[in-house]
Image: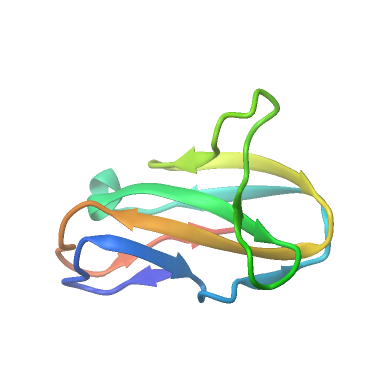
Length: 102
């Protein structure tokens, strides 16, 4: 996903507020960007919804919230749902930030 130049501090959902369909099962997600310090992105949380309305932050096996703030690889094991990337930007961005999730 792409965070536009001069995006104000705040919380944004990518790819959209509605998320994307996830078929379920175990998958590995790699988050990467060439921009240093993720260009003001302070955290990316993975959120799931089973009813298209209520969103739940994913946690690890110790019940700690899963949060990305640098180039990272994560494994997710969850049933069929919608997923989205809840992104917290700490200060106005400078330049375009392209974060690849694959």
